[in-house]
Image (cartoon, rainbow, N blue to C red):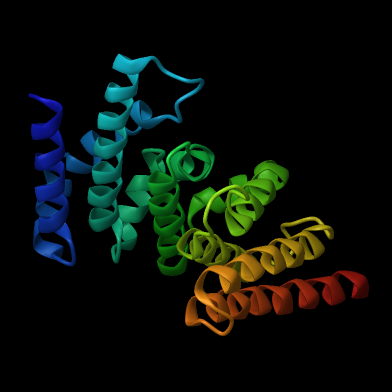
Length: 231
């Protein structure tokens, strides 16, 4: 099949499974989750600058990966059993180790969003047990997404998704991050909100929303610091 056909099939499948429990169950029963999960490795972040032909191939792969994540998201959302199966197949581990560090911002956003949703719906997902081993790398990655690329136009959507995942993780593992994470987060949020105000105007809802999410995270970080001092 051509790359375009594969992408179309995935997109159609993804639309079909969205909020459709019967179709989701049928697809899982046919081994669809395993087949989709097995295709995640082809979506690893690209390294280096590819040549022209490779550039076209990479662009096709990124479109494929976006639709693959869209379909996986529709399949695992709102179903704890399917989320547990996805955990066993390494889906959430891939999102955590590869997806949120990907070279494609679109893949990063989908990975951040799916992780946050899954942790909200299944707060005992096994992937949480891997977080202490990834603490420093995870903190760097999330802070970078909050701040966004300094040389490019501010991306409030990326910052929001990163902040939502930070809040979700803090609600489940309040003492995960090092004490330096709070000040670093405050600096990143200050930077992105200033740039957001410059791009959209002071008081814009997008920028105010980022500050609100950051404030919620700060409350949880402060509470965990107090609890830690009392131990």
